[in-house]
Length: 142
Image (tube, rainbow, N blue to C red):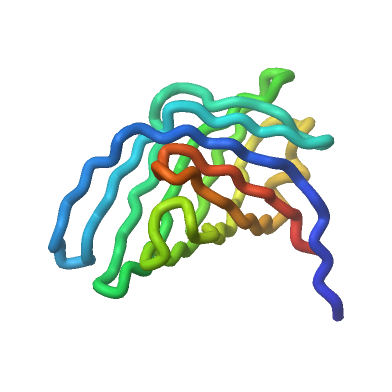
């Protein structure tokens, strides 16, 4: 059985200044709120809805980061899609130099986008040098 990667969308995220909590029991916690989010693709297009979107990142002693992101997207035709993803990034290379790997899941009740509920997506992102912008290429796994 071969895995196929079908292009789904590009997601561009602008981030706020992070809140940093060093030396917690889980490592360094970095909470980064999402300022804006744009989704562009042939099958889905949309933007950030509301302000309750952030990454609750944890970083271990070797500078390996674990993403924990939750956000709400409103499509250009008015559907709401809750999106969550976990992932990894290696911060030892410096901000902006490392790839960011993610595994998004989508939840919606809108009939037009129910197909999103049944897919697993994967993404590879790159960050800006200042760490304030991320761009992901996202694929549906088949």
